[in-house]
Image 1 (cartoon, rainbow, N blue to C red):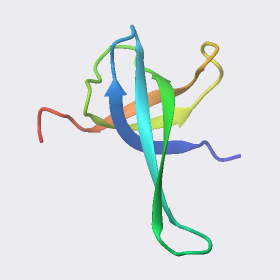
Image 2 (image 1 turned 90 degrees about the vertical axis):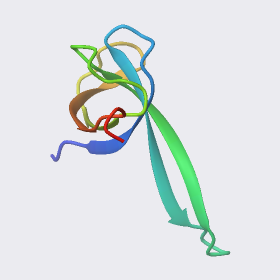
Image 3 (image 1 turned 90 degrees about the horizontal axis):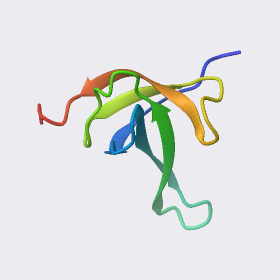
Length: 83
C-alpha cells in the first residue's frame, strides 16, 4: 500500500509540535466546467517546531498521534522567509 503524501501551506503554528496545513484542490465543476477550489485542513506533527506560518511543506500520513492528528511533516519545501 502506498503512503499518502500531500503538499500544502502552513496556516497556523500556534500549537506545540503541531501545525495546521491547508491543501488546495482545484477541479472543474462536473456540469458547468468552472474551476472550483476546495480547501482541506490537516493537523500535522512537527517535532522540532521548525515550521512557520506561510511555509510550503510536504506531509505524510502516519498512525494516529492524537484525536485529530494523523499526519506528520516530512520536509519544508519553501520557507516563508525566502519568498
